[in-house]
Length: 233
Image (cartoon, rainbow, N blue to C red; front, side):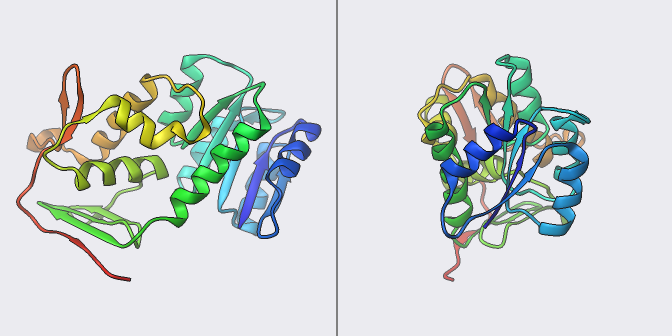
């Protein structure tokens, strides 16, 4: 597996490599947006650790550029421990977020969690109305048109459809999406992810809604009548 680290602090970048180093992992270390784009096209990384403040631009610009080309896992690093920075990263498609300074042990746990999420996707197909979700092949469409979903959006969607008709509390969803690193996650991060998923699945012109907010509790996928099946590998 190839991990791209986009961080202009070389000492920190080297520390991340040392903390994550495993026999089956390869690392690309870039210090600027331009370098990162060049590496992306040459090495095809499978996971990105991205600093926000870079010498030639914002890491958010690179995140947006990546999301136009891939849905690989992205963990954002920033020196700005502010809610707006977290919301910005999640809105642009980041899968996780850490503020500096941070523990390399916690970073390792977060990265391992993202890696497990990608590796543990079993074959599972869900169909309802014009929606088609194949979690094994990572194919998601609405009315035949492809949907671009981040890793966390895919995981949230699967939680909803596997528990359709049941209320999933905010605490359960936060725990399932972000608890692996053992670090506090602002509840607003869940709202951002849910709203982003809603915007991709639902068409207000057709008055269609799948994710129902249960005020004071959490969310529920409205139970559908269409097929839902597990496919054996």
